[in-house]
Amino acid sequence: MRWQLIVTMVMVLGLGLLWGFHGAASALLGGAVSLVAAAAFSAIVSRYNGSTATGVLITALKAEAVKVIVMIILLWLVLTLYKDVVAAGFIGTFALTVLIFGMALFVRDDAKVARIK
Image 1: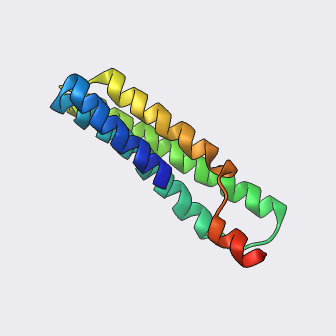
Image 2: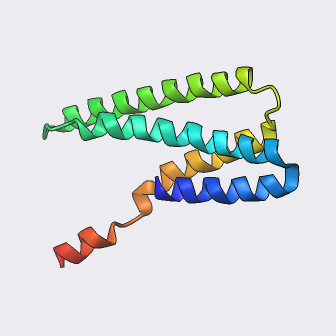
């Protein structure tokens, strides 16, 4: 989620310079949609205490379903309520941050790795 926030802030600055306030606000909202959905996903996954493969799979599917539902609702809210949204900035930032979330599997937690060694 840290990288999602970093990418969001970079996009806010870049689109703010390119399209002004509404570009920056659109980028911020696009990143916020992804961050809130990621937080919902994390909340579901963190509650799981079991140890079976079936339980892990069911929890992952539930968390993914909640994430997608939250994304759809928030995307709809922004696109219907914010009349001056810069669609390219909003959807672009949203798409980038969703891709970043998907890449989380490839990021190591260096503090955890140091403890293992």
